[in-house]
Length: 559
Ligand SMILES: Nc1nc2c(ncn2[C@@H]2O[C@H](COP(=O)(O)OP(=O)(O)OP(=O)(O)O)[C@@H](O)[C@H]2O)c(=O)[nH]1
Image (cartoon, rainbow, N blue to C red):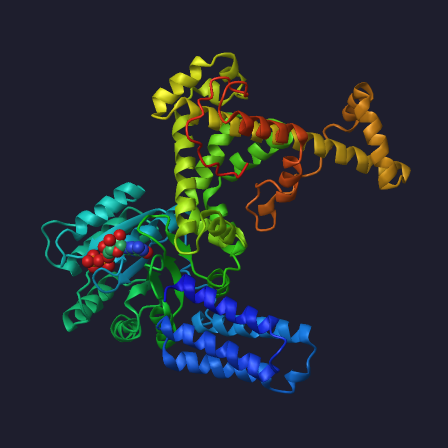
């Protein structure tokens, strides 16, 4: 059973228990536990762990006369106890498990694991993680066992812009590791990641090599890379590596696709070692910080806002975002702003991964694509393609065009043809993008107006003690009298409230408040534009007269 199915089955079992009014409480709990334990076993979670989870949940839910609790409290208890016990399954209770590297010091991290587990890929992903956080990072390839290992690391490193070290001629991995670390230390690198060889199976020679490399490079942290798709074997493998390499952290790879994951989860308990990251694909950005609560939340389809904010923080340029939001609330939204937004979306990784983090969004995507199994991935992949295409289109614009409000394209439609040619897209696709930009620009103008109105209402209410209804009436009167409105705006201008950003709480600073966005979507002008566009189906008479009506692109923003 793949992880997504596991989550769904547990989620359903809990929901059935919550809505069950016919059976007595003990039967309800036992039925729920039967489904949960079967699902966990089918996902390869070790039988000992499943049995202990079952006992703990049962004890918690049935002890001390919990039968007598009112139904609403019983429901909350069931949700909490199941959630906490699932978290315990993947939590080894260590704090700050990601290695806190020190700046201006050489921190060595050594990777171990079997061949093909995803070591080399994960080394580069971790290098990118630290590089994004401002560290000077280097990669050492000490895998002299597998022909082509150095080339693979080199390719990954070049793609990720990470300096690397390796040798085509030196056969001794201990020497390569030692030389590489010495070189990077001399050059004042702050994070030095050493990739070691793997073998197809656990064997003495491999463990001996790891011990030798470890003794020369003296790692600050050793990480074991574990393939999540190997099932029950993971536990045994982790134990064997722990004895010789004594790793302090685990990276679970291949948690995407059809990994059962349960075996790997059991390895955490067997070695009492924390999982620090999970690999969710072959690309550099398919790498998520692991937190037990976030993982279980996502598994159960409850979203992971913590992870979302974390990704958002790592990909947004605070200065750019702040500037963009300042302009947005002043009613200014250029094509360049639009391009930066698209680039941020792309940096967040595959949209299907991001969607899983937002409560409800994954389900919505599944519904739109008409199926739970992979359907949402198709839908999101399509949306990713559209975002990428939009970036190509904007890359073909001149600096002046990008910094404009887009009106130049209406005045001079030949620009659209030029951009379509330059970006390898169609005129229709360029026009669609311009249309989306216009909608965002309209939203920005509405936001500016809303903010001004709200502020004016606040000021008036504070000064006069008026009721909100009376204030509303006055505002409507003033709207009908533009001169009076202008005067008032002048009076209150430069005193706008902060635009409430969804990321504000987590410090990501910068996404427009969703509630406000929804409000703006009710703006009759925006609705009229959308209707006009839909009605024309790309035909003449729309905002961009030459819309060709070719086959309809999905709109990633859901307008
Ligand atoms: N789907 C998926 N594939 C992954 C992930 N991590 C690595 N891979 C793929 O797994 C294969 C093996 O990965 P490597 O990084 O070469 O594994 P390795 O452990 O370094 O292997 P050796 O160098 O032979 O020891 C490659 O095709 C990777 O692209 C992941 O999280 N998800």
